[in-house]
Image 1 (cartoon, rainbow, N blue to C red):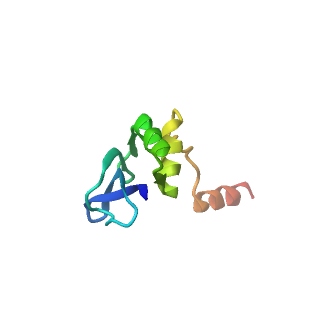
Image 2: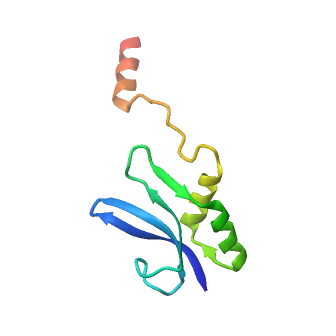
Image 3: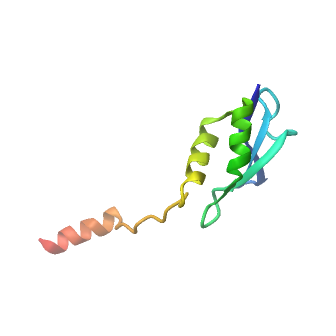
Length: 102
């Protein structure tokens, strides 16, 4: 059975993943059938590149994505995969504001 999964590359504490089509029982970082894209979660901003046409083609051929790859594909299909977060005050700053009001 074919799986669409993440293969880890990169240095220690600096992971970089390739999104690959691979046999389900083969090694995580071993040889793969097809390369669909890559994902770099530690870079700022995060990088996610996925060929959605190839991804859907492999799904129709019977390859099953892992949960993580399925969620990344869903993010890649949206226009903004990693929207910027709104700045929030820390708990300490909120406590200071509450103390100043009193």
